[in-house]
Image (cartoon, rainbow, N blue to C red; front, side, top):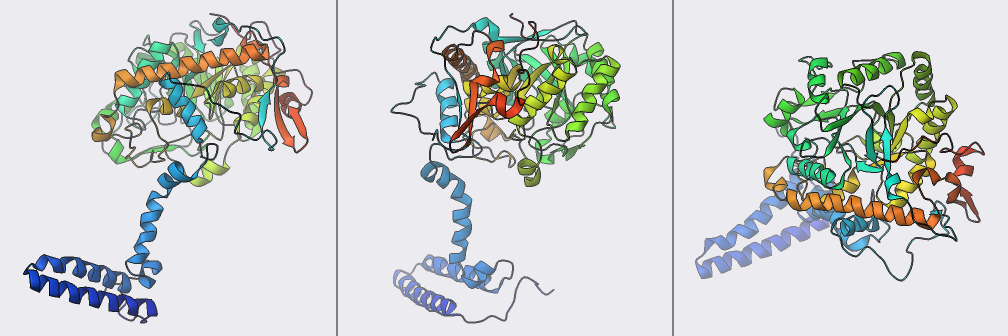
Length: 525
């Protein structure tokens, strides 16, 4: 059969002529050496080079290798190590994406209880457009650490939950390894904060003593029947576990809203298949839409059903804002039906994922800074803001990130990739390959056994603790005693070369401040 990738007709370019002369000389020298030493292995190297050059010359798949045999292959070598070369030798402290070196370093330092200060002066440029800062007070005070808990659950909920202002964002077992999940949950137990399961279901590794927020996605993993539909009996059994404190319905995800998900067959181990109630060693798709509901009324009825099945635990939903009218419709139906979710998680378009198409990661969904004010004001206009807590999710790393999100309308925050950094993530950008070098985003035992659960769980707790302490210092410097004191008129962004505008001016358009709605907005535990 004729090989379509080979072409015996080729042009003898000057480069190729030089190559052939060099190879002829190399072969002749190797033959003389082999004869002199009576060792034919000396011929192996030149013959291998000749074979590669011949193959590259006659193949038709890669024009670069055809025009520059052997040497053209160096391009692929350099391309494969480009991310590492850039991260370690080229990029500056503030250049890296999605997270720069300074962001990663502060998590490493806080998780290890190492030096958390920097010297000499700021590295960011306060004159660049987009620079953000907070107004400090001439009269600093001591912030109240007890105020950094948020009571989630309105009067339709019989088992409200006191959540930390900072919690572990949604990451599934399957996307992450068993040792990573176990470390996160034990860290949550040590630090007294919550751990979101992600849509992959509840595993034994989520039940290591930490509080759990069970996320229900379109695949209904862990509570699905054989056809992939919601199974109320399986849900009730797990939702009533003592460690499960809240239920979160995933409508959409910031990194890939409206896309659904996929579990590759090589990650669908026997253990994971049992947890998710699926067939092992098969590729499993999570649909882009739920089958349990298809409109606002049905969504709210589903919220009510889950609340009853879980024996009164807080139930809410996670959403990345896209079409504003659709969210407004959901809020309008809250008023019409009288069914009020206990919380809403707002995931920004900058949120993370293990794998998603470029068009969804880069061009779909509303940024968190735009979505939070919209959600909060929409609830406020309907008179529902005091009954619904808002969680912010999307690139939350530092105390400033938390305070900024509170100012924009959030009550509490999730951090997912920040918690991954505390586990030792080096931002290798290999989450979708199954070859995570530090054993976090992989199911390869040779890799994930490198995570020491005892050590890493302490680092997770340390990162949380030190970030909370930094938040207290930050609040005190700004004159904020409690979270409810954090206002958008104290945060600024440079919007032009000679203009700084407050978040209130940018997002609220002289309307009533987001958090001035009720004395019961925040509850002290």
